[in-house]
Image 1 (cartoon, rainbow, N blue to C red):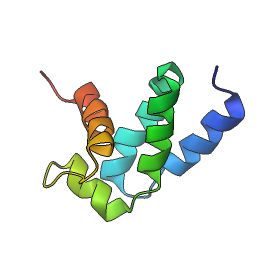
Image 2: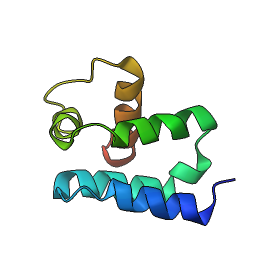
Image 3: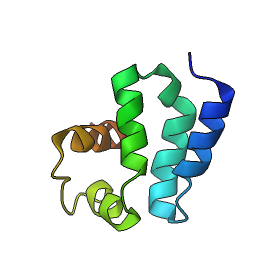
Length: 84
């Protein structure tokens, strides 16, 4: 179970100050994070440690992370908002 303190902390860390990232990360942490398994939760926290400019490129699909696990998390977040 994810505690409210952890969710609040992640909510604020997910607010990057860049609209393109905020509209992806904030809803993800609010709506999906609690249902992730421990591995994916840790992966999301790792993603938040990345530079905004790197994440911007990944989420805008201009390039991909060299780390396949981080790229998997990016894809998971994008799959929520992109039509299939």
